[in-house]
Image (spheres, rainbow, N blue to C red):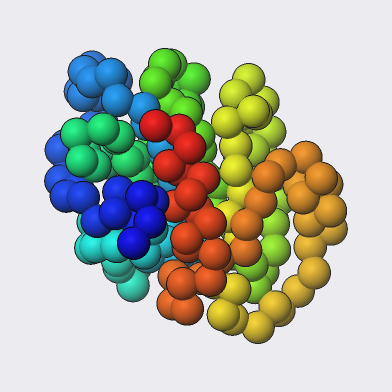
Length: 191
């Protein structure tokens, strides 16, 4: 068994949900964050990477409305950020969530990498590009994960080539475990 696989078998505990920066945990562990459009398969990917049920999988897109922190093996924080493109919430609530995410991304000093999830079957949409553009200050921390590789590609996105030349990227499936080990190896590098 490799060091990487053993590392991901460590215990991961839910720590807290934050709706404002003063609630963030005061820890010095490196952090990795996951973000993506609602219904992109973020919870499924987090659960596949950490080999246990951490993030709640819902049939209702946009269920995560706060920042969820998980302590992995007392050596890393795993951060589940709210999805963007919220389906059934008010404009005011969408703005509050967007502001919370923006504050987290720009102020969290121990944030090492941000995995931006994009549905591989749909390709990057304008909203994905806008989200990535909003992170230009921390561009070097972005890794693109194209999720749901087990599904048939429905459309080719005009944004695909630019993203793939600008950012490190992986095509993954939490259903078939395609490239899950590659994501684990990448995360392991940040320790």
